[in-house]
Length: 66
Ligand SMILES: [Zn+2]
Image 1 (spheres, rainbow, N blue to C red):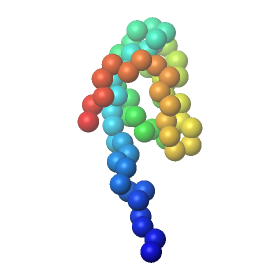
Image 2: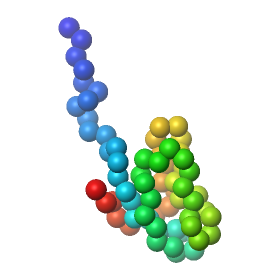
Image 3: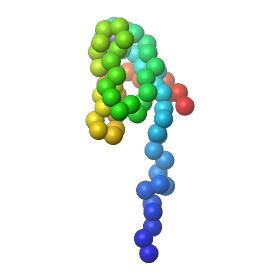
Image 4: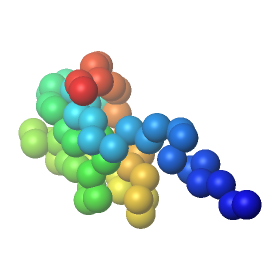
């Protein structure tokens, strides 16, 4: 009998992250599961890179907001 177990592990779906740009020090809140790349508003450095479903944070995370 097939069992659905993939739902057992909670995946963070919608989390906002307070991050600090390593380049210019700008603090910015970004969507942790964004489907598109997120750039620093000040200097344009890529803060979050979308890798097709899972986002990769490329900067320092200060805080995870729920
Ligand atoms: Zn920056």
